[in-house]
Amino acid sequence: MAVPEVITLTQKMRAFTLRVFQTNEPTDSYMTVYKCKSKQGAAVNASKMLKKTNVQAYLAELRQQTVDDSIMSVKERKQRLSQFGREDIRNAQGTLIRHGSIAAMDLLNKMGGDYAPQKVDLTEGLTELLGQLRGRVVPEIGQTGQDAGDGEK
Image 1 (tube, one colour):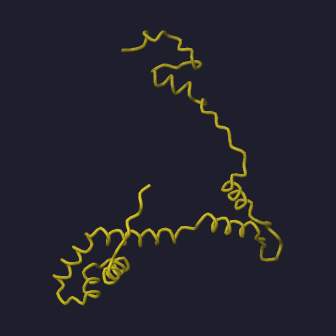
Image 2 (cartoon, rainbow, N blue to C red):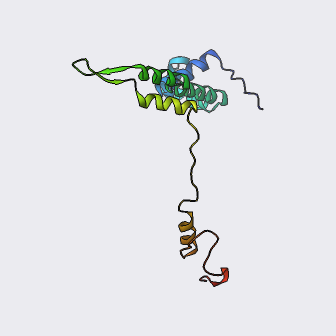
Image 3 (cartoon, helix red, strand yellow):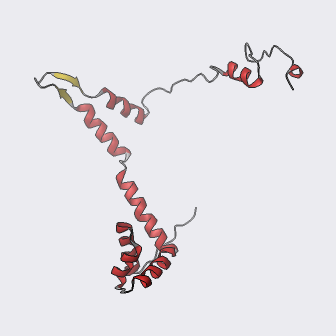
């Protein structure tokens, strides 16, 4: 198993990369962090900086954290579904319409593997499909109706 490479960045490199991540403006980020006055010089240096492996890795790490934080964990999903399952839904008059959410409980059961595995018949339609592939209809698997050499060429 490969050991992850340690990302070593200076404080300014880190600040530059973070600012690029936040603003998507490398030139402006470089000018701000490195106190650069020349826009052209900042553009050249920002481009060089973004080509560095450790800067690219830190930028990728920032992006991955954003994706990870925006996706609910399995635990969070189960907690939310459990909350939905415990809710009582009432109409404007206060009459109970639904006690808990059956759909939420169904999803929780599926996530937990609480249902018995479903059996799937993989041969359904297979005879007809095989016949179509051969260019003829075959009544049953194993019964070709013709010899293998009798087909079209």
